[in-house]
Length: 103
Length: 381
Image (tube, rainbow over all chains, first blue to last red; front, side, top):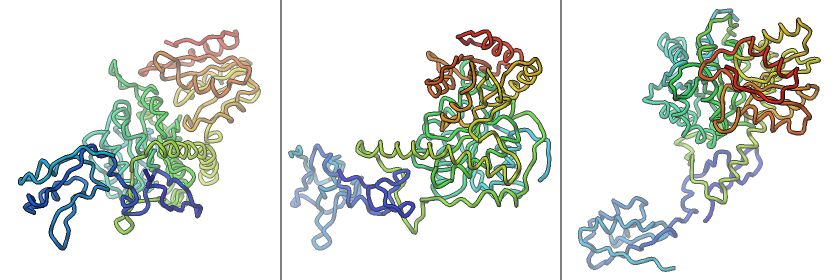
């Protein structure tokens, strides 16, 4: 796992690996820090059953459900999905199922 | 500069005002109550431009302290005993996030049995949590140390929170003459707080992220380095304070009393040192070569300075106002470890727990023990 506070930070004009107090000095560092590898279960969306209510998108605690702007379809961003399955439990059309993550 | 008869609590409140503190999250607890009381009065009277946050507990006071420093405000709080115990969870977070600020602790025993009286069990038991700990002996020193405290804590080499410990009741509620410096003098000594990092919507940053096992230890090493840097910074603050105000406390780390030519010495912290001085004066008149080493800075621990101070002594006695139950006095542990290589007798005395008086006769007994070559200390009742 990439350590996010290793981002370039200058203290006393000298490059230091670790900032005092572990401050992350740049925004959006989660883009560098992939967290989807914690998952035990993988949510799978059945696009035929999906009614595009977007409840899964609303409920996802990690904003890992994305909406395709062109088609309006939802998909899971597995780079950040932790496999909590809240989306599956919320889905009124039962369009989301789970699978054990195999790596 | 004006001279006033003040108790340490009021002197501290005045020092907070003079230090131009911006935020005071406060939850009053005996015997520190007069500090927030006076600060509230200063603010209400329009004499002090600061925000007082009435919090619902000490845990919240410490949390608000953290949040306030994160936004770049000079911050102060005060507490004691169970209050400090309730803050305990937040103490290492404040120091781990490298937030400078000052907290005054009116030292009081921890329950049970319930006690509102002085000993050092509250603050000494938080000594491992990354706060610089200064221990004062008089109201004057309390005022001076608060002002120095911000300078030390905010120093770029330090960036750590600082605790000013003053004995509950024996100091917090005792009136004595205090020189109060003018605002202009303090402004000259203490520059505006310039945080290294602060929360700012224009420049977003993440504070308090997770430290994975591959990095956590590096941050602790940084904290340790900052603590060691603080030794010099405390000394420097003490000497520059002397230049500005004409007062100093030993070298800032240790305050020695009649140690020239001394053969035996007691080591302690806080107001018990005042009593020790009376005993030493008396014994010196009788021709006994005795002295006092007052530990002013407990964390970081002034190891080299201590080795230097005791090198010509025959024996020392350490008076702990706290006991690490199941072991010994923690100050004794620190001192014995620091002077391990010195060939010297060192005895541990536990004294003054829960406000039990430490008197001149106690010190006379301790010095008598040392002179007789006694190899073991005891509890002084």
